[in-house]
Image 1 (cartoon, rainbow, N blue to C red):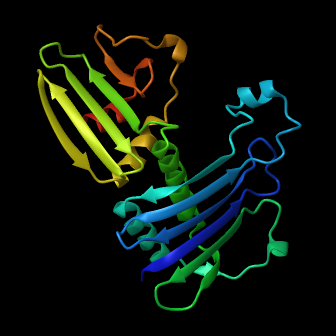
Image 2 (image 1 turned 60 degrees about the vertical axis):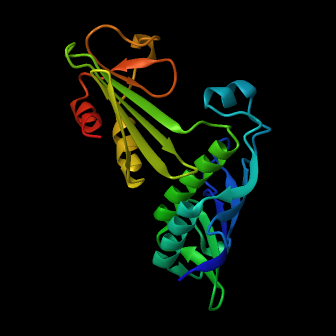
Length: 246
């Protein structure tokens, strides 16, 4: 089943304090050219009583509120349509929510049929998709770059290997560029690969004080996450095995 318009209203649980609390409204419309028209507004309430130093320490600012409107390509329309078709909506009353319950309301206007509105049973799937969509909107306005990592294996000087992964949230594409013995090859991977990669990459603790700040020359296995730090990941066996098989 296709749709014409979706609106999502979400708010973190009442028990979650500032600066972590936020709410957003998303309106998405399918267009004739198979793209997805987006209007997104994110607000972080109740930060006025928090000191600037505390906000910065938590990785926030006073200017985190965000508004964006634009279009995302066909891959996004397909993804949202697939999730809509898997979603069952339950009627609910806001007064019945506990203070630890997130607020969700999704309205779906199908091409043919009556308006559907309610709380999604598969809220985790919608939460993950929304995180990807917010990241895509940041990328669209160049507030953030596509996700990129580089794995460098210098354990065998006769066969040095470099693997670069570039993932665009706007395009929902994952590209792998492998360089070995000065020969380069490129391939694309399914978008679902990225979730597995990021889960493994961020399952480890990296020590900035022990990182190399320039491209390493000494033996080892190294990981760069798009900034200047190169981390020695030789002891992270599951991570290096996963990266070598990309």
